[in-house]
Image (tube, rainbow, N blue to C red; front, side):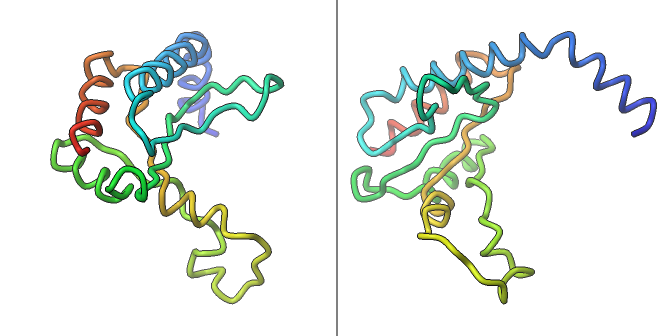
Length: 140
């Protein structure tokens, strides 16, 4: 690691707690604004032993309930100049691993197909978050 990268990383440690607090606030705001939207589920802590920093706020879109897919949400956000992205593509679906054995039940495939990372940066305002939530609500 270069001295410059190390210095930047060290400087970021001073604001780390503020950034984590803001990410948690953003997650809670999305949950509040979208709580009455059927078919939208949030990733959450599995139990009280966990305390996520919610670095990303991710949703899963159940198209059978919402009437629209994760991809339709992503494209709608793109039209509004809002960047979202699918959850990461599972390793076993990457071309480099096409010939490797796979042991699973396709949970990760369903999450990739239906999951979406919403804007979550600490510089986002509450109004930015409300705008994203409003667009999702308007899709109904």
